[in-house]
Amino acid sequence: MRGRCDEATAAYETAYQEGNRHPHLLRRLAVMRARKDVSAGLALMESIPPSELPLCLQALSTQCGAGNGAVNSPEARLASIHLLTAWLERRHTARKPLQQTHWLDGGLIGCSSGDPYAKTFVGLIPLSYESGNPYPEDFRKAFHGLRAAYLKFPELAVTGFSLGMTAAWANGDDLEPFYQEALRLLQAHRITDRKSPDIIRVHLFTADKAHPPHLHPAVFATQHAMLTKASDSFEKEVLPLVLDAYGSKQEPILRHFAAMCAAKGDNFPTAAQHWLQSSDDSHPSRAFFPEGKHRQIILWWLAKKKGLTKSIEHLVKDVQR
Image 1 (cartoon, rainbow, N blue to C red):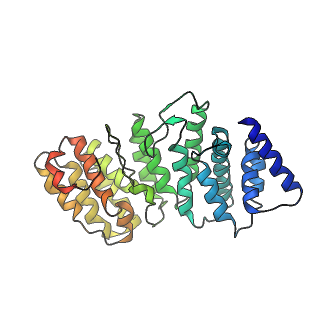
Image 2: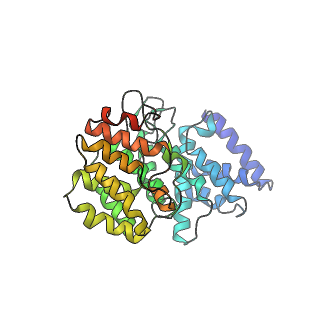
Image 3: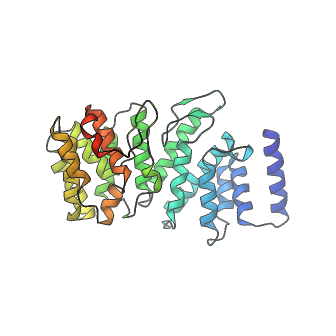
């Protein structure tokens, strides 16, 4: 494997020295150089013409995930993750805005899932590794480094927050820091008003265990406040920040969700039905609760936590179990 990588690197270096400046050659060579020196790889990435950069970043984001052959070996993936992190950090330092950010969602997702060298859950940071992956701790650190970079950009904050929170849940970590992080994001208006990426709507169920869906910071803060905090935490800490950031039209849908979180026993199905039927016309609300099955996935997961799945089966008939 290493021999193939060395041969590929030599071929790309030769093409570069001969004057080839094709954008994807620059991107591939940047990853190869980043294995030893991230700054050298970053310099090549920044030489890519702005008009070609989105497609190159999309490819780099994809390369953070798993694949076949030397291109997506563990070493190449780590180099891609570090290179994307460095590019985002440089962009943030220079105060340059991001464009066409939907393709960047895949970077952190690829970093944390779809790894043939690891036993993973959908959208989660790898929790246990097979012997084929020699860098488990390196991948874990790379995930957190890239997530921190995502949080610096309003366009990527939902992805950064939700994947980090889900990883913490899967690892059994304390979620209180994510509650505080969600409040900080809301207070600073650090979340762009854009529809959540498609990954937010994937089904997050395995055959034997259900994981929490990826939640918007406003939704997680509401849920965490209602399930673990003082009874007035939602009213005092969460709701004012959401209304200030997104406007008063978001109040009904969050109040219905908060009521469902707090509902017990026979009251839960009615509260769940009210939430499912609550208005979802405004753009921010679609970001909180994307359409279709994602709402039902959240409902099903919450019902399982409460041991009330039988009482709401008629509401979630088309959710994959």
